[in-house]
Length: 245
Image (cartoon, rainbow, N blue to C red; front, side, top):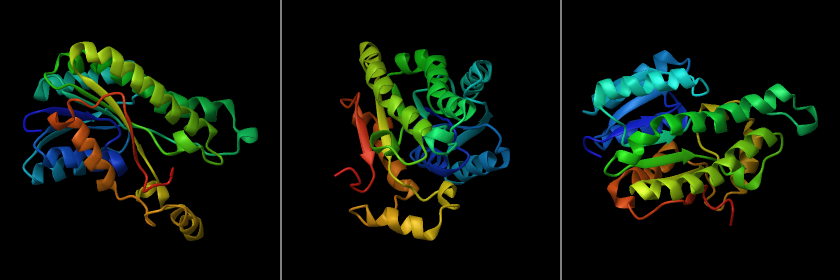
């Protein structure tokens, strides 16, 4: 990854931050995207720089086309065109479907699916023209299995599967690839509010008997971002400890 430029959306914390730091440790130039967590984004940049990498923080709401275009300009000014785009930014608004408001439905699809549309289209030429262009979309096991109270999130994450496969066909004409990573339940701050008894039930359903570590997901993304994955495209790679077996 030495000298390659990677844009990771929603990378101030959680899985996105783990991906950004992993790519930075492998020698990539990293654009750490955030919407509101400026301090956390700067901490991520410092962590990458502490390991000898190069990084910048770039504020952009992925649902705002002009903000995403401005982020691309920042990327170009700092490092040149992007070689890798990781669409990780996401949100949840959980409630049972019969009680779900149109706003809760639309806001989750707008970020998780609409944000991926905007970022991919804005950075499409960069990825197409890169010698080893990579598009990597972060989905979820929920997109494959569903989850109580997450009809909006499941619909959005499932939509990424078809989107990824279609873009893979189109990017192949430029010798670039597109793949999707679907993590299972991962140790991030998003799980901090989940009661311990609920987490115990989740772990009991995982054949490997543990939650995913952020690095478990980041390592797979690192492979897909590298030249080693040049003949892998249009795939959905599960990182869920065997939950779907």
